[in-house]
Length: 183
Image 1: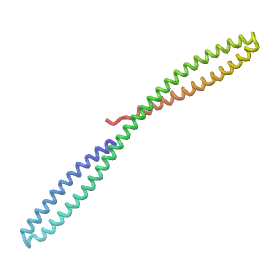
Image 2 (image 1 turned 90 degrees about the horizontal axis):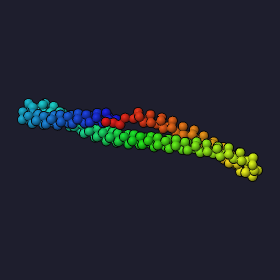
Image 3 (image 1 turned 180 degrees about the vertical axis):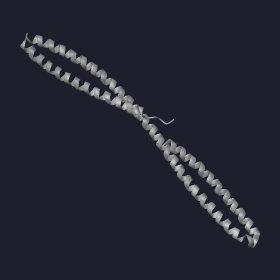
Image 4 (image 1 turned 45 degrees about the vertical axis):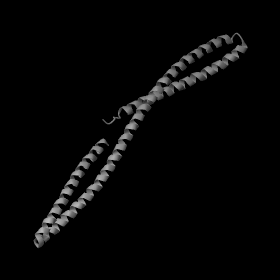
């Protein structure tokens, strides 16, 4: 897109050159018409040629003005596209950073959940030993064991989700690494 903008600027320079040539041709045609008028009857054929050259110069001038308008529109649209791409790239980079930070936070949550699961399993084990001492305590400890199993399952699901998110963050980082901001 940047190259398109540069090309449209080159076209603008060429259009300006054509416009200058058209103006000079118009002046030459005017001078030729004056010379033909001074020559009288002998310059009549030359006057017709001078008029035609002047009309061609005017048509060329009108065409260059239309081209110039189109080139300006292309340049404006190209600049907007470049700005939009730069903004999108910045937003993707920021999103990748957020995903990476989220992955780190989820990794910490995984560690805490693992430690918590280990502690809960220890409590469950102690509860099982105490259950032999009293029937009332046994019922309570069985409930704690059930909660421990659910928490452990939740921790495993969290760990799996964290792994998936870490993979997604790595994929996104690789994808963003391919983007090059225009110089």
